[in-house]
Length: 202
Image 1 (cartoon, helix red, strand yellow):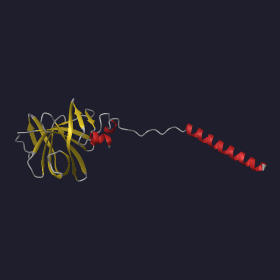
Image 2 (cartoon, helix red, strand yellow):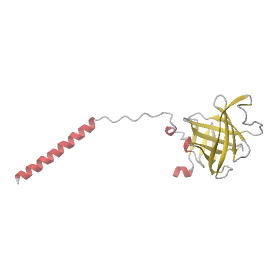
Image 3 (cartoon, rainbow, N blue to C red):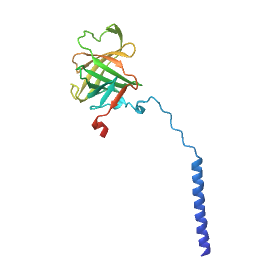
Image 4 (tube, one colour):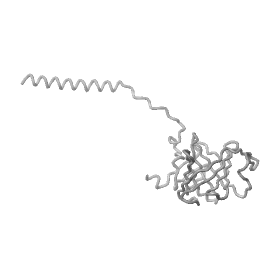
C-alpha cells in the first residue's frame, strides 16, 4: 500500500513540474511579429472601403453628401469593376467608378451634355484640355437598384486620360447612343463611405 502511495505522489510531482516548466517556456517565448501591412490600405481607413459600396449607401466627397441609387457590376474577361450612380440634388447625372488595376482607383464622373465629341479620334480637346485615348473595350454588366438600365446587358466603352487625374469617357449600352462623362480622380482618404441601414445590419 505504501508503495502505491509513493508512486502516486511521484506522478503528481512530475505533472506539477512539467506544468511549471511549460509555463516558464511560454513566458520566455517572444510573440510572433505581425505581418507587414500597408498603412494606406483602404480596408484600414476610417473613411471606409470604396470597394464595398452598394445601393443605399451614402458617400461624402469635398463636403457634399450623395446617396447611391444604383450600381453596375461590370466584367470583361477576368477583369471586374463597379460604377455607382449618385443622387445629386442639382439634377446632374454623376457616378463613381471603382476599380483595381492593380492599385485602387476611384473616379467621380459628371455627365457631359450638349457636346459633339466622338470617341473615334486618338486625342480630344474639351475646354482647352487635351485627352489622349487609353483603352477601348466591351464589357458585360449586371444592374442593381435604379440605373435606368435592364438587369443585365453589354456596354462598349472608350476611355481618355488628361492631365492631373482628369478623364474623359464614352459609354454606350446595348448599342445605344454614346454617353459622355468628365472624370476627376478621387484622392485616397478624401471619400467617406457611410453604409446604408441594410449594409450595416448584414
